[in-house]
Image (cartoon, rainbow, N blue to C red; front, side, top):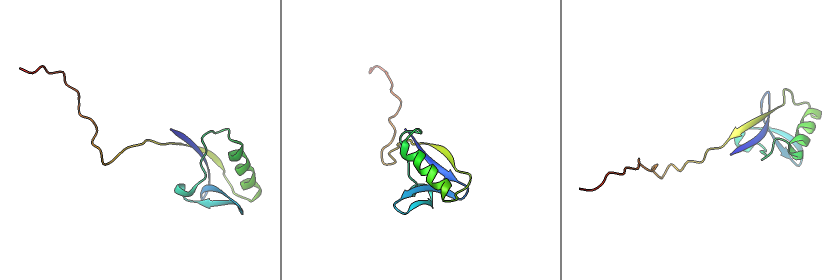
Length: 80
């Protein structure tokens, strides 16, 4: 799964009621589409607020379940 966020020179951007704020990645606003209107609006607001070096980043999410072992190799060994 791919998600998109905005990064600037000191962190990531979160859209809050007060306006854009700088946060760590786990608090950033993320979007399904890089063409999202909300994402574009956040970038414009951040530029007006003086955030510098704003860029779009693509996040790749891989789901893993650490409590389940991966299935072993399948064998087709006939029983004797």
